[in-house]
Length: 287
Image 1: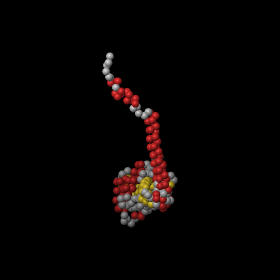
Image 2: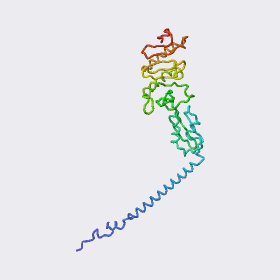
Image 3: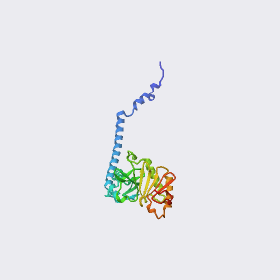
Image 4: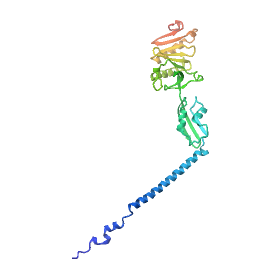
């Protein structure tokens, strides 16, 4: 029986035949092709890296990047010569080869230096921004006389030529220091308040006219003037009120002929003021 031509009998329409003829490259050929493409990319990147490395090594030895100018800003107590020495910046080092982290670490090891910022300015300049510590007072610490900063840190042992303009805080006990070596925050806060109040320009002016601030667990804070060592006892509380009263008492005593006999002023008794060493006519009780 003749059934006629079917779609399966037409070679041009046999989809199976086309798929068998155009199967494309095998898996091995694809992997090989990717391998060569990857190898070329790796070689290009390696060549670029090598070129950059050679250029960097050349720059490290090139006179063009030799450090010629060091600009130091913010230093008042530490000389520029000392900072250059401590930072290893004296020699004509290469600016690119300079390890700024090490330089910062060495400079911040200087006792007066609190913080340092470094900035390269190609081709041959380095800017050094210095933040120095501000001393609050001198303090007896670890069997020596040290500078105390506003954070309660005794940061540097004092030399004789450095001690003339700051009062010494005395009377501190071991319990007044924390384990990290910082002063007790309560005492530090009182010292900062005293500095602010006594620096208003009225006698006795802090710190130029004070030689000592004594801390006593019973009497509180006592100030000793640089002139004649007059003791001014403030107590432990209401420091602002008592210092305002002190300014009035101190002003009223000026001009007295017997002022040289003044030994002390006590303000720890509330509203009562006791003047020691002068006659009762001075406005207080003689003691």
